Each structure stands twice: as C-alpha cells, then as structure tokens.
Length: 75
Length: 252
Image 1 (cartoon, each protein chain N blue to C red):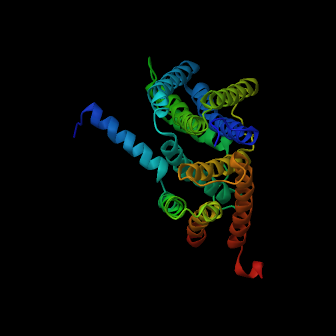
Image 2 (cartoon, rainbow over the protein chains, first blue to last red):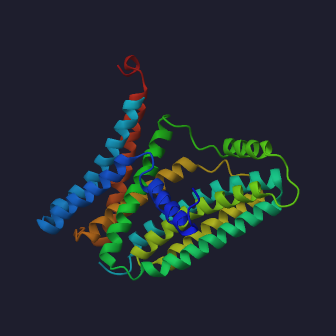
Image 3 (tube, one colour):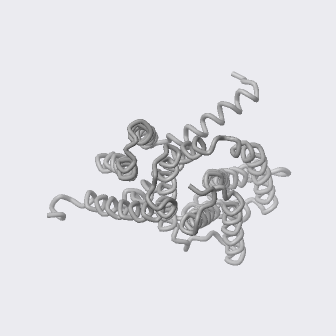
C-alpha cells in the first residue's frame, strides 16, 4: 500500500525511537519506567530524600543485573 | 542546583560527549573508507554531505524547541533516555568483555562492507548504492552524536560546550583517519564504550533524580560518586559474566 509521505515519515520516526529505546532489550526500557515511578513515589510523594539518594543508583544497577541475567540464562 | 555545572560536572559532560562522538566517528569512518575505496570517493563525499545536511536540519528543528521545555521535565525525560541508552551500551560492553559477544572489529566491518559493495554490479552514472551506504553510515552514527550532544548539553545548559567537545572529537578522528588512510582498527573501542556507558548511566541517574527533586549530597559533585559506583557495578557484572561462561568443573 502506498502511504502519503507524511505518514511514512511519522511511522519512520516512531519506529526509529522504538528501535532506539526498546530494541532487543525491552527489560531495560520497562525497568527505567519502574525506576522513575519508584523514585517519584519516594522523593516527591513521601519526601524520603535520603532513601531516594541511595535507592536510585541501586535500582539502576538492579535493572542492569536483570538484563545481564537474561544473557547468562540464554548461554 | 546551579544552572551551570561546576568543574566535576563539566568534566563528566565533556569527556562523555567527546568519547561518544569519537566512537561513533570511528564507526562512520570505516563505512566511508569502504565506500570510497570500492565505489569511488565522489559518492562517499556526496553521502557525507547529504547526511551532514540532514543532521544539521534536525538540530535546527529540534534544538531550539528543547530550551522551551520546563527544566525539570526536560531533565526527567533526558535522564530516562540516557539511562536506557547508557544501560544498553554497558550491557553490550560487558557482553564483549566477557566473551558473550564478539568485540567490535573495524577491520572485519570494513571487509564485510567492501564485500557487500563489491557484490553490487558497478553502475554508469550515479551510484545510488554507494551514496546510500555512505549516507546511512554517517547519518545513523551522527544521529547518536546529535542525541548525546542535545540531551546532555541542554540539561546541563551547556549545549555550546557539548557541541565543541563533539566537534573536536569528530575532527580528531577524521584527521587521524586521513593520516592513516584507513579505518581506525587500533582504537580501544570497547574500553571507550564502557567509559561512555558509565558516564551516560551516571548522568541519566543524576538527571532523573534532579527531575524528581532528589537532593543529591554535594549537588553536582555527586556525579563523581555515581561514576565510581557504576564503574564498580560494571566491573562486578563483567566478573560475574566471565564466571558464568566457565564450565561448572572449572569454577570449582
């Protein structure tokens, strides 16, 4: 089917960002959303700033570990 | 937080942009050399020029609009993108260091690109295959540089410094390539990618926190603590990866 140029450009743009952000590691994409939600809850809602300072880098390392465990299991 | 980053933040910003740009430029250079040597330099240069024009247009369209986004939202979104992007880089770097994935080999990529181009029949007149290959190579690698410069630069209010850092890296790699007259296969790409990944993840963590009102101890100086923590994380995961590749008996 021949789509108009604008539609093709929009589809290409969306596909580019989907590939860029999700690609073959959807777990990292979803983990980032979970991290943002968790830090939002702790910092903005509960105002536990010290907890947020410790928790944020730990959650990031945890997200990477989850992704690496996928690699190790596939071995 | 101050609008302008102090020395520690600036150092991380400049080195992250410089290394990321250098790595992407090394990859683009390999494709350009493959196109130039196989199908002629005219199409390689036309592809480069068209890609640079497209990238400039993208920056001109999206760059100015970024400064109108409220800073906290910008930092949260940019932080999220940098986190995903950085973790993807670190994952690949760990897999390469521990043997789960082949190391990036510019000589091999050059040979594969040359073989792909040689398989196409030579054409009279305009060589669309060579043009598109050079265009795609420069555009896609350049796009990653543009995203790095815009995201890191706008969040730190240092787009000028980030652009300058990227430009220096691009020129340095281009001049090195011209002098060597071949792809730069001796550049320690994996080590550079690991370093960039650590910095992107550190910046991503920092900006996500800033966007969500986390009060980092020592303000921007905390970036260095994040870099240290992420280096330790990468080292640990690389070690665990290597262990997991060894057979059970060898580990015992």
